[in-house]
Amino acid sequence: MKYLLAFLLGVLVWVPSVQAAGYRIETVATGLVHPWSLAVLPGGGMLVTERPGRLRLIEPGPDGRLQLRAEPVAGVPTVLAQGQAGLFDVVLDPDFAHNGRVLLSFAHGRPEANHLRVIRSRFDGRQLQQVQAIFTSQPAKADTQHFGGRLAWLADGTLLFGMGDGNLERTDAQRLHTHLGKLLRIQADGSIPGDNPFVKRTDARPEIYSLGHRNPQGMVVVDGVPFAHEHGARGGDELNRIQPGANYGWPITTGGIDYTYARITPYRSLSGIQPPLVEWTPSIAPAGLAWYDGALFPAWRGSFLVAALVERSVRRVPMVKGVPGPQEVLFKELGERIRDVRAGPDGAIYLLTDSPDGRVLRVVPGSL
Image 1 (cartoon, rainbow, N blue to C red):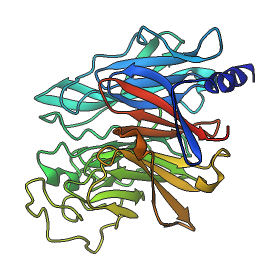
Image 2 (cartoon, rainbow, N blue to C red):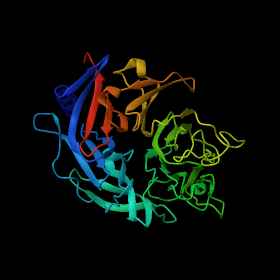
Image 3 (cartoon, helix red, strand yellow):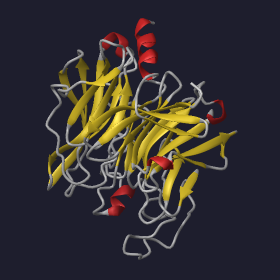
């Protein structure tokens, strides 16, 4: 309780802030290089990944205010940081309070032969220890695009995460011999759940949970059901309700066209393909996903929050009985590419801005 109190007292005096109708945006930390993901620690601090390969700690200082520790967290494995490759997500183990485990996803290998890797480790407050690779995508891919990388815990304690299509041979997203263009599910130690949908097929990678994804960079579990969004090409960004074994269409169905303005496929829908829950054309470039059910913004409860890079906003997608309602565009006054959005345990909303001088921001009611 004393840590939470220090956290709440500290954030009330953060400056500078931006005031808008109904909310105030406070700066928590600056000077981060392309921050990618954020995890809130039980004591009120935060872990933040920087795409070049650093894990940073934001912690309560002597006066109770949150501050960015100058030195990065030690023990992070070597990361391939080139193009879109780098250090991606950070999540805490569901039993972090007792085991101190932290999981990271990142690009591993060489530009001409690289993988998505997931590791678990123990965080002792200053460094990562007992680092263990629990997943490495196969086969190796060339080029440094479309890694996916978001991680989320399912209700049964298994780990779900996305792998992009690599942006070279798009139809790999439809092929079961490769992890490319898939959502994948493993146990916390890297072993394969026996009920994965393709685990008994000799022609399939046993980690595959769903297929037909282009570049999934947002994932959240709501009442036990996983949801994920992914980048389209020129249009065709999608938010999907994820079902085991389902096919989400890329590249044989899409609402977008290629960057060259050529048609990718003549089909927007086909039998046997799961249609998107929400589609954005033109693209907003969805990059982070949260579910808001907090107390600070009652009108926003029951909504997805979608961080958007190109639109430089957060899209609020209210859900009513499983059906998306009219969307609201938030935080455009910042004029910033928003890489990630998180709903904090205090009911506040946290944003990461994607730039060489990136920031962690906190959104609270204007009257707080």
